[in-house]
Image 1: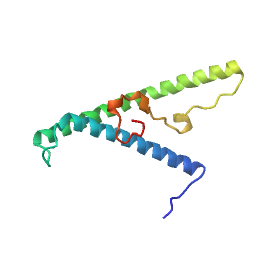
Image 2 (image 1 turned 180 degrees about the vertical axis):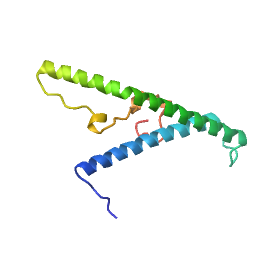
Image 3 (image 1 turned 135 degrees about the vertical axis):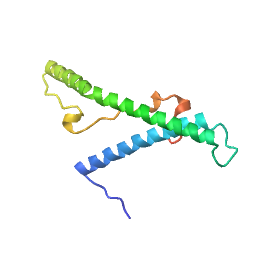
Image 4 (image 1 turned 135 degrees about the horizontal axis):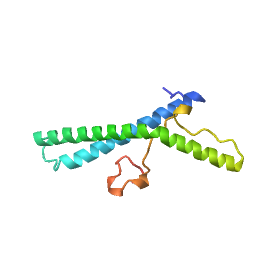
Length: 133
């Protein structure tokens, strides 16, 4: 079966969904790597020990809670950041005498997602699926 190739708005939506999936997978991979490295000191046994399971549960819970708090703070700051960016663009456009384009944000229907570039992540902490590491 051949994949469906969309054009126009359908393609943009598909691109956004792929971006969201990529972001989710990056967070999931990071969670898995951090917790596994912290909680499973050896692979001598097939099953996890009870203390390893408890550590993994605790680690994953902390990671999810901290991620939720971080996203809540981001969502709180986002309107202020968008307003500041719009003001900067308008000021720059007024100085140049050009009509500014709307930045991505809630007004345009787009919500930019913060992404770490591979260069922002220390080499020892890159994902196994990261082709640049």
